[in-house]
Length: 208
Image (cartoon, rainbow, N blue to C red; front, side):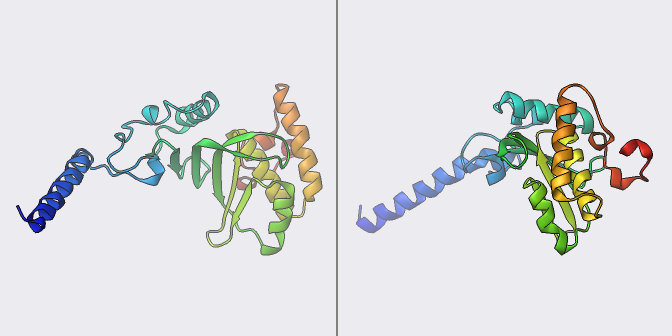
């Protein structure tokens, strides 16, 4: 066999190997994506959200199960995250396998990111980040997001963010209110700031 024929034979064998490796995913309409945390020809993608979070840490899995219990199965899921769109008051909810670590206000492990439609004036962005670095402002999408350990804490952060935008509190005042309210929540007490988005309904005396 000539060198040319040998090289051609090796190329054909290599192509067949790639085809065989990718065939199972193709038959099931699946493709490996970075969101799934898999390489081509790697593990089969999870078929249910339960399978997706099976290897997550206890805290991350608990956060995911709370969201599943409240909003049903996510629209999109993989081994790295679960995603809901237009769920409840939220534009989007993402529960991630890996937390966003921070020391902006308190030392937390933040798995739950939630976003709302809200226009933040450019002059207020610095104040919001001074209050809490877990806040993300997307001026192109008119989107305001918070990533904390739970939905309740996202309510708190975003309610205080809107207070800052509206001039009701300074960043320092919002930070002090956050710490006080989080401590009360840990002792079993609650606040309207933890129970929903106050800026999406008419305020009442009970909100303060």
